[in-house]
Length: 177
Image 1: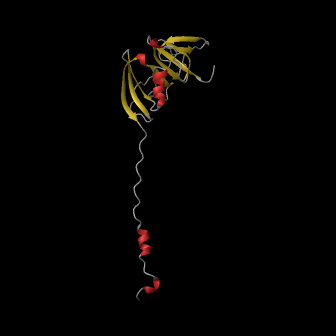
Image 2: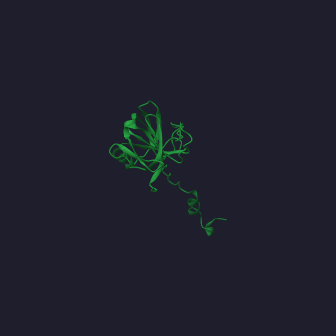
Image 3: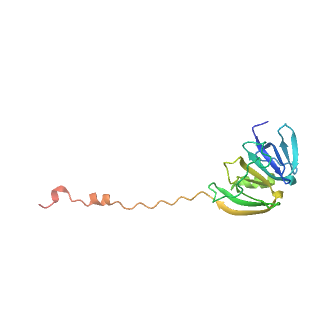
């Protein structure tokens, strides 16, 4: 297994989960995703059957209900990182928010992978990145464009009083007694 394959948990539209390995991008081929399972077999999964793919730190195989540990699905406040703050509504009606890229990789993912990669609201959880196929969504809403705070322009320097003090001094021998 190459280091380009990362740990993922595929959640199907039936809420069944499949642990395995996938590359970071470019894994959709002819409408299916070839998942390398834990036994080393390649299982093709139809894109229509996938709700989302979570890139995870650990598989958490003992937790059958929520192995991806994607507990917080919306942002509590404005995100700190840069990106497109999106709200995705799945066909089943549940909602997931995330930050999408603001560069050309966003277009590449939409074209080549037929979906959207987002960073989830809780980056300290088990899930580091989420891939959502376009077919799994019923609605996609752009909440905000998050950018780095702009730097304030420096104010022009005020004239120094110190320069005037020394320029206007009378030479020492010319003072009246």
